[in-house]
Length: 95
Image (cartoon, rainbow, N blue to C red; front, side, top):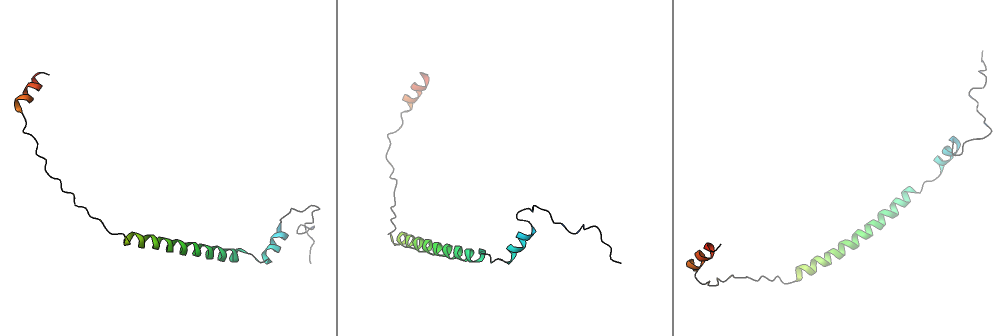
């Protein structure tokens, strides 16, 4: 009826690899701190974002509170002396 296959299913080595199946099975049942750490990180990030928002809001308020200065610069035409055509022709001819 039941035949013994020579103990193929049984492995009992003298030296076992550290972190093998037994270590993984034990680790499954331990409480993992990931969720609590993520919650702490999210809370810290929210605080930093709120601080930045408030400081940027203050900067924006300061910038909008400054009076806007619009200076209209009018370029007044400076009268130039009339061009001397004869002088220009002489200078070109000398080249």
